[in-house]
Image (cartoon, rainbow, N blue to C red; front, top):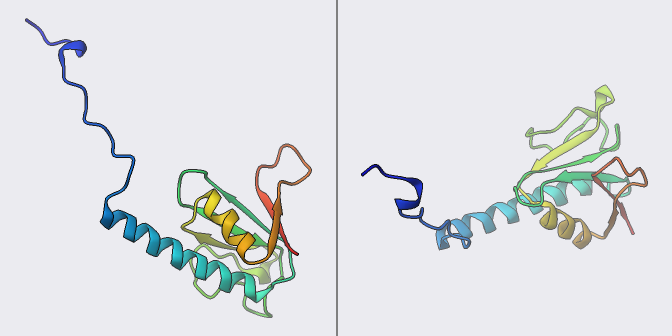
Length: 129
């Protein structure tokens, strides 16, 4: 008798809760990313920031306008995912935060974040209040 899809056992369920080891690593990554975000924002605290991130994946890009950092820095000092402000590009940092974590982090740093008025744009813009 040939096997059919209905005669095969169901696949094991995917765990919804990470293991204790994975949860600890996630917490450490979030803590490190929040510290990097705070250092990045402290370089130019009065400018507008924008971020785009996934609601589920822990990858965010936080950017500020060209030339809005300390003279000659053009970066957060990490070298990871950072554009050079001297060339007129935005200065950005790549962080290991999902959308909710990024929003909470910006709020905890004293920023008000909202979607831009253009309905075709999906990033959030944040201004210090």
